[in-house]
Image 1 (cartoon, rainbow, N blue to C red):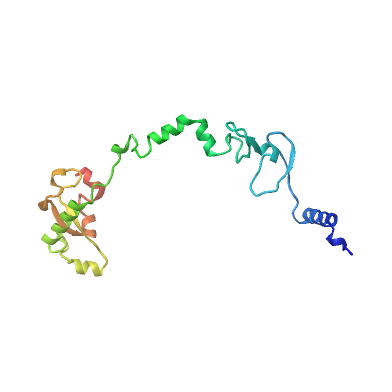
Image 2 (cartoon, helix red, strand yellow):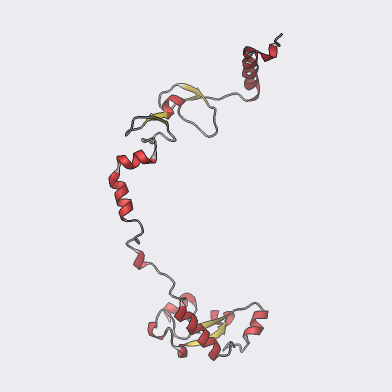
Length: 187
């Protein structure tokens, strides 16, 4: 004895009516062929399933396109179809752009600069030369000490690592100097 609810026809009819009540499919016109289709998936499809399938320009296989401009079924087919583009990419891989030498890159840092800073701090006994506070006092107030260039780093490249061109300052005192940050260019 089979129950009515277990037959295929009954279940198909039941779910069709359920979908009409709860979640009706939207009817959309295809932008390519103009035919009607039901929106079944998430997103905003503009083409029907037939138009969304494309034929690969290289191997001729059918594939589902993500957008209408997609011409190849895979990246491999795209590379085989346009070898000149891939050769150009491979040729320039790992090289710097033409304008790389024009970019402003930080010149501070490195072993020589760190040695210079430490030498300046040791010479001044880790004491700010303006406010005369020690590094330990400043550390308690969570203020850092810096090695300041008396004559700007960018304007005097020969004096960059001269010990006589350096002094120890706390950060608030350093910000008050006429050579702090971008003010150094006008010095």
